[in-house]
Image 1 (cartoon, helix red, strand yellow):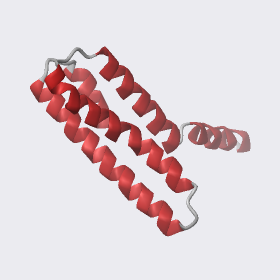
Image 2 (cartoon, helix red, strand yellow):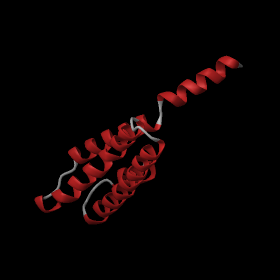
Image 3 (tube, helix red, strand yellow):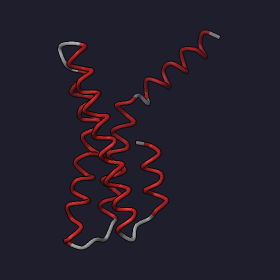
Length: 110
């Protein structure tokens, strides 16, 4: 029984919030790379790229902070970036011809 508990704890650690954010950002980068869009839409994808990649970056930076308050501030910034990412994804979904299922998948993951 103790061994099962250790395995569960190890599995949770191996897919921590840091890992989830990293894989989310990686998937968004790949999605943007696959999309075909006009120059006029460049800023939409640029903003999505910036907000999606900053979620995990802020969590990593905050976890190396010197105080608990500093860490909490970085978590708030990460949450704001996640909400901004949702905004850009929904705008892209409604303005462009993109894979709506991928956007739905990203919105539920973020």
